[in-house]
Image (cartoon, rainbow, N blue to C red):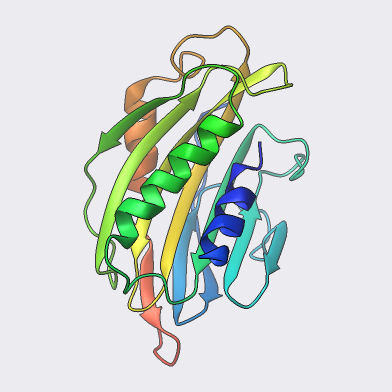
Length: 197
């Protein structure tokens, strides 16, 4: 489900298991992000697109593709969106609305608490679960952060697909989602001209 593409369009118009973590350096408009991508087999994103005011980058585990995946990490950036009033709430609302648009069943949303990532000005954390993706034989759940940078608004998501009919994220325990949110919140944001290692 590529719900985040719709998020970018709207904003620019106005199995689990032991994994080795990698920290990847990703320039994203005003800042450089050091990302905790747990299954990166290559520091370059598996897919990236930018139109100058919005950017999206995706990473999937080895053996998967951005078209056929079980897990995916997605970073989005919206240039200049961090300074507008209510930016974080709008970012959360867009994530939920777009998730609902691609879901054939009611979406479950659970807010969570995480530490504010280094170099950010605010963060909101949530887990979204869609038990049945429209037109597909799977559901999808996602741990996500909406992050306020110095100038830009970012989202960082860790999504996982599961067989249709599975309850509450295919029996992916809540503790797993909490661990993933905590893992994502270890990202760091640095000024573009600053050494961030």
